[in-house]
Length: 481
Ligand code: SF4
Ligand code: SF4
Image 1 (tube, protein in one colour):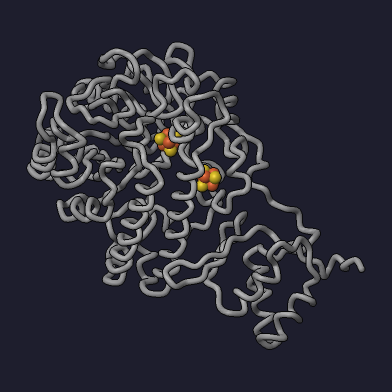
Image 2 (cartoon, rainbow, N blue to C red; image 1 turned 90 degrees about the vertical axis):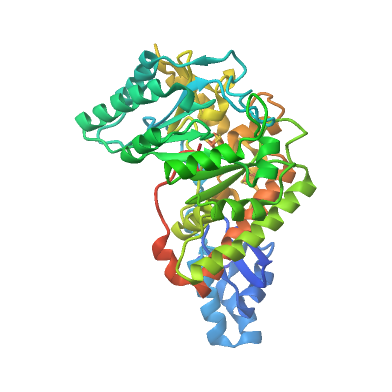
């Protein structure tokens, strides 16, 4: 017999899992979730594989085990979660939204295509991005800045990041571009933020004062304690970089953010992060290497070890929260903030949609990691952003082009994964690019951990949520760049 529409409930996608002794139910499309009690866990069994159900029958079946009041409350909670929805309510599909390009707001200036370190895993070919070594000229940097400003919307905020190679090797250009961008922002009434990603080996007190006065976010690349960092991040002339980095950061008294590249040669993430927190970094973010080189890129066993360390760090995070402090492990902080905000994430990052990276030949690319790759070129300083190419790329990069993302429970918490990693995992072939199954399993484990950590904090240290929040980078990788 057909179900009257007022009684019919559609079952939307959900994912239920157990982690750290907790049972959580996650609504795939809305990203809302709850910790499940026995009636909720039992109701899931009724819903699994079902398309449309009669509400009264669902309540009745549950009431036989838990009583009418409990059953009604549980069904209502599933309605609030948007897992049980009235049949006539249109389905909201985030992926169905048209792809639109808005003015770019973030510019990464590759001021130095050269580096004084020789990290074996460097995706950028020691800062050369597949080309020759070279520095950006001040004139070109200023033209790139003008290119960004000239296409902004009224009142739009601006982010400028200095990158390389090693940007401290070309400070005259940093000063020139910074002064020009700051002056334009002031004249146009815009808020502007600056950042720099550096290996810090050339940092001086004078430079640190400049960065502090101009409120730069200073991100320092360092891979952990000396035995790990020095193996992976040697100086160009030989020898480890650890002592020099730490000494420069300490003597310059800069509040630096640490950014760690994890490789299969350094999987003990708990030890690495704890060390850098003790060394005084205000924030520590880790990012799995994406080099396309089997010597460094992770296999399944390495990823399992990394996840073990991530689990240990969530315990640290909760312990700190209980004493009212936010742990500096930024991957987890960012994820918990994202979960708290409850916003479905349509895209993984702002590559090509909010962010562009500019090189010393005048070319513009979708993001800093994709500089030098023709498939990701979106314009040139002489001609500006190529609107057609940019829209085509945004369409190719959209998670709706990635078949595995369409059936993935983590689709709207993940956003579809880093395009650079997807491109490497697709052997640098033509679009669509997708992330390997093994790495997606790792990502999904990470999101499970994030949801569980949120639930733990809500129970054990709810006051910490008032201390979370903060600005987001246009890059989905930790600490952005
Ligand atoms: S985990 Fe993998 S399949 Fe799932 S949304 Fe992210 S990139 Fe796509
Ligand atoms: S998440 Fe990946 S593709 Fe996106 S901006 Fe960051 S590095 Fe680039």
